[in-house]
Structures are given as C-alpha cells and as structure tokens.
Amino acid sequence: MKAAQLFVKCLENEGVEYIFGIPGEENLDMMDALLDSDIQFITTRHEQGAAFMADVYGRLTGRAGVCLATLGPGATNLVTGVADANMDHAPLVAIAGQAATNRLHKESHQVLDLINLFSPITKFASRMPTPDIIPEVIRKAFKLAQTEKSGACFIEFPENIAKMDTGSKMLPAGKTSQPEPRADQISHAAKLISKAKHPIILAGHGVVRAKAWQQLATFAESLNVPVANTFMAKGVIPFGHPMALGSAGLQAHDYVNCGFDHADLIICVGYDLVEYHPFLWHPTGDRKIIHIDSRSAEVDEFYPLECCVIGDIKLSLERVQAQATAHVGDLMRPLRKALIAEMNQHANDNSFPIKPQKLIWELRTAMATDDIVVCDVGAHKMWMARMFRCEQPNTCLISNGFASMGIAVPGAIAAKLSNPEHAVVAVTGDAGFLMNSQEIETAMRLNTPIVIVIWNDGGYGLIEWKQMTQFGRKSNVNFNNPDFVKYAESFGAKGYRVEKAEDLSGILTTALADNTVSIIDCPVDYSENLKLTEKLGEMVSPIQA
Image 1 (tube, rainbow, N blue to C red):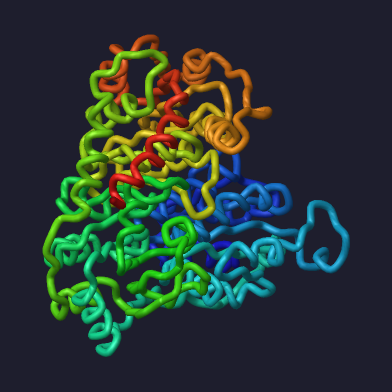
Image 2 (image 1 turned 180 degrees about the horizontal axis):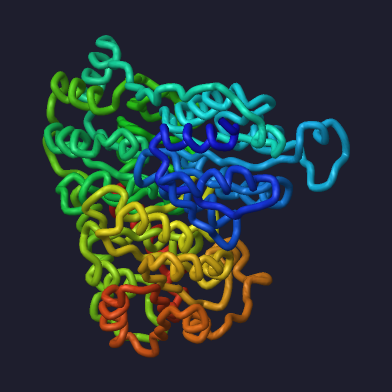
C-alpha cells in the first residue's frame, strides 16, 4: 500500500469526517488518496480559514478537527488557527506537506523547519521520516489532541515519503478516561466549602470539555453557591438558573468582580488561566482557592491554592457536593438582578446607530436557545460575553485563550457542518470580518447557510475603547469599508443593511430563514463602551457597602 493511502486510512480509523485545507504540490499523493475515501475534503480559500474551521469543529465535537496545507507559506498560514486551538484547548491535528527528505538538510526552495515552527504552539509535532511509522504518529497525534487538556498536534509529511510503499497496519483508536479524584482531596474541599461564609464558583471551559455542566448546576443549587463563568464557558450553567451570575472577563470592576471582592472562598472548576488572568479577579491574592480540574493548576502569584481536586470533573463535583454543607442567604442576588436589569433596559431603544445592548437583545430574541453563535474578537466580544444570554453550553463560542481575530466566519462554517440542524450566526466586527471574508465563497459552494452580523463602526473599536480609557484620545484605529451588501451579493449571498433600529428584528428573522449565506451590515454605537466602563466602576461601592 502507498504511504499516502495508509495515512488516509489511519485518519478514517480515527473517525475523521472532514479535512479543511488547500491542495498543493507537496500533498498531491494525499489529495489523490482522499478521492477513494469517505472523508470529505473542504477546499478553503486560505489556510488560516482551514485551521479556524478545524479549531471550531474540534471545540464543538470533542473530536480532533483536521486541517491540511502544503509546505512553506501554506504551512505558516496555519499557524494562527493552530495556536488558537492549542491555547483554547480545542482538539486539532494539523498536517503539512514537505519537500523530499533529501532537501531538508540544506537551504532549499520553500523549505522551513516546520517541526521547530509548530513545536511551541502544539502538544506534539512530528515528521514522517519513514512510511512505516505512519500508524504510530497518527494515533499519538489524535490521542494527545483529544486527551485533557486537549489541544493541537502537528504532522509533517514529506512528499517522497508519501509516495513510498509500506506494509504497516493501522493501530486501534482507543479512548482515554479520567482518573477518579482522591478521597482526601474531596474531604478537604468539602470542609473548606462548609466553613466558608461567602463562596463563589468560577467555571471555566474545562467543564464544557468534560461535559460536566449538569453536575455543576446541581452542585451550585444544592450548596447554594453562585456561579460566574468565563467567556469560553458561557452556557455552562443556564442563565435562567438562580445561581448564575453571568460572565467574568471584562477587564474592569464589573458586577461579577464585585462578587469576587466579597468572596472568602473561590471554587475554580475546569478553569484555565488563559481564559481570565487571576490578577484581574483576585488582585489581593489573599482568598482561599479550590482548584477542581482534570489536571494540576498552572503556578501563578495570584492563584495560590488551598486545595486541589484532580481527576474526573463530574465525579469531583458529585463527591464534594455529597460531603459539603449547603449555605444560606442570597448575598449575590443583587448582582444578578443588576445584570438582568442592564440587559433589559435597551430592549425598546430605537436610537441609531444601534446600541450594542439593543443588537444583542434582538439577536437573542431571534435565535432559538440551542442555535449557535460564533463570536469574533473585538469590542463586540466584550458585549456578547456580558449580555448574550446562554441556556446551553457550546451555543456561544468565544476565543479567549489566544483570542484570534478572523475566527467567526470560518468558525461558523465548521459549526454548521457539525450541527446542520441548528441555525448558526457569526458575530463579527468590520475588521475581523474582512480578515477571512473570502470563506463566504466556501460556504456558498458547500451550500452551508450561515448568518453573518457585522458590527460596523469603521475602526478597531476595542483598541479605541482601551485608548480612550487610558489616554483620553484615539490613535490610528479608523479605516474605510466596502459596501458590505454589494460585497455579499458578489459571492451570490444575500446582503442586508440596517438603516434604522426598528428594522433590525425583521432583518434578523428574515436572514435566519434565508437558507443561504446572509450578511447583515449593522452600524453600531460604540460610545456605549466608555459608559459601560464608567458604570462598572460605579457598581463597586454600593455592593461592597
């Protein structure tokens, strides 16, 4: 059997459905082998788009998304999406072609040391120096990519190796399981929770990866402990749950931070430091912290641990709950009520350009609770993280480990491919949209209906927000945009422009029913950014008093 054919059969053995990528000279044999496979190759318009698709596919399914590029510039174009998946702990396997092995020892056309390039941004990076190790390398890559904490792996496949014959056979695709938490750790955590006066939970994306959201909600309700979630863990506890405080992650003293200020015990469940720096929610460094996760915690000055419970998160929550004593009182309820009031106050606001709060209200109203939003990075991300209500996990995807602009459009395509029965919306700024808008053609070619909502402010809104907060003036953040309606139509997609607030609801409803790619150009009033910053600061004194 040809090595390229064995490679593809090993991918089939791992349950791969899609490969996102671009054909090239150095992966010709693999592209040919894919013609005889059930794996669907998704031809993208840029390798970064392919990597982001694999990233979001992995995050939604828990199975490694796969992306493919050729050598040199094709491989380097994968880097941002691969790094995003690795830092956001989304399972991904990236594959790149490479020049023949007799060229790798010297300066040669398009040749880069891809192993050293990808090693710092992956869990595992390996070259195929001989066809006989293909089954081992692929099995190891998928095993590491999908094992907690999940992340990205990279395989380099030289073109001459792909052409060789091999007698090697596939290895069985085994599944891994999490160890049980230790009894002494469970007991210690339960005693700390029982003795605490004002405990609070910070839930991270690890709860989603462990599928432990039901255990978390039961734990919080049973022990009467309020829950704040990171941006990446939106929906891990339904917003309608009485213990839900909303999202933590704004770099200011928001309502949830006020809760951390008052807490004497912080229970971090499935939390990764990259999601929300501890010095932002624990600047004093003097509160007791319990770390409940599948792996030991990162060392950080502002994350001193009183107790670690390491192992299966579901079991950990169930066993700690069984031994801990429930709390009384509702100290955090005013925080939740204040957040709900803020969400509701702009529901009937018809000012134009549209306020972020109004845009989110209408979007939430138009979408079903199990539909999916893929959020890009920018000022809109901060508003979506705070204001978009989620009742289920993995229904509002936000990149907040690596936090890469340009993820929303390709990510929405992958979300629709993996969840065809649900509506999918990409929420993006005008800057992030144009970074990977070429993938609209991919969506149209695949007949993959998605809605893209562009928050149009003609600039880098988040950077302007920070500039105005720190310096009181902005610097080089403005740009011009094309006519987004005509741009959409040039791809054969539908384009809509919101020209008054009263039209937004109807446009969203129409676009969601279009059954094609629909792009909505919505002018947004980001003067609300500084108002929010001021409001968050004002909330500190009344709550602490």
